Image 1 (cartoon, rainbow, N blue to C red):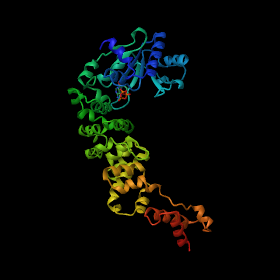
Image 2: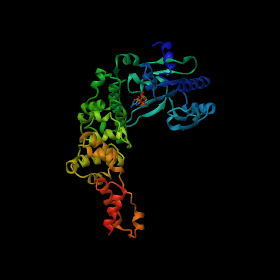
Image 3: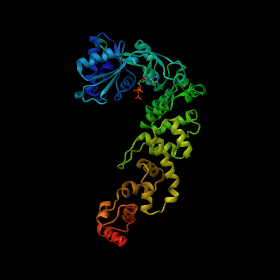
Image 4: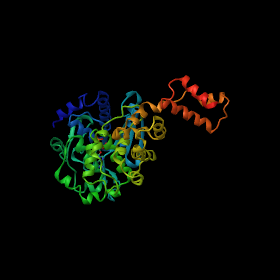
Length: 418
Ligand code: ATP
């Protein structure tokens, strides 16, 4: 692609909103003033060349990113969080710019060495070329230069453009997946997201040797990869593919394959008024048919929060209890479901289509009697366990259709208190 084509893409407001274009020009001007080569890299360049709207900006300088960040803050405002040890900084953009996200990562071009398989690499400042050479795939290893007259120059030392045109995901060197097997998960995401293919030898390197490094990855890093998968539009395709490529056993021997019958539910956002999360729904659908011990053990391996483990466990328990609950009165359903996370109930509804679950989520959980503890006190009742019982029974009467009005409720209450 010629520089003119790239300039045209950089000026396309359908791909880069005008506020972000202004941000880029400001960065470019400051870099030029400091004589500091400055680049935009990674996903931004990949998506721009695909003529897709770009996401986050990653800025790399050949020089000190913290010094560059301080100069940007001085000139344009905002705040800087420097990480001197990593030669990086986060620029908290001026609030008046109203940009989302409101922060920008500034990074010093670096070289990486892997001292131990599966661990994070050691980094040292270097050139943009070295920085591109440490990346995951050729399509992510391109940079566009921003400073001064260089604005719009494409750096593509690994011929990522050709792979982009052919729709190929290609690692940069044969040890890539061994150095960092999270790249296998990333490859799967790009493959489905863009309907690309894994280049032949790249595919071949997802083998015994690289899968063997997966057990060394921390739970947090693996979970992060699954979180990213579940946030994608084509997540079901990706999680099925991950299973097919044998990624699960090395993570945890009991990690099951994703049930393809549940695929459609992954794409579904709850229409009900309940707190939803695509990632939590993903784990619930994936693990709901595992045993209690397996869920706890997998949750520990993937470093789940206790809340997430509980929600997944609740799905599995509720699904197992359905045969015992089916045909119960609304009050029995309600008292059984009430302590469970709403999203867990919704997920069981999706797979089991038990109408009572939907009735609970949309109606029953909101049903309360008019009478309160204070009302009972005003009627001369001593506060105690009986209080709670009466209120529960009144609620059950509403749920089960034994009372239909406030008068009915009072009548029932008076009968009980006689
Ligand atoms: P996405 O659209 O999936 O967010 P992205 O390219 O913006 O894609 P990030 O995870 O934000 O992805 O990473 C930014 C860049 O950092 C990538 O484009 C890639 O060049 C590099 N990168 C990220 N993770 C790795 C990795 N594990 N190994 C090597 N390079 C990586």
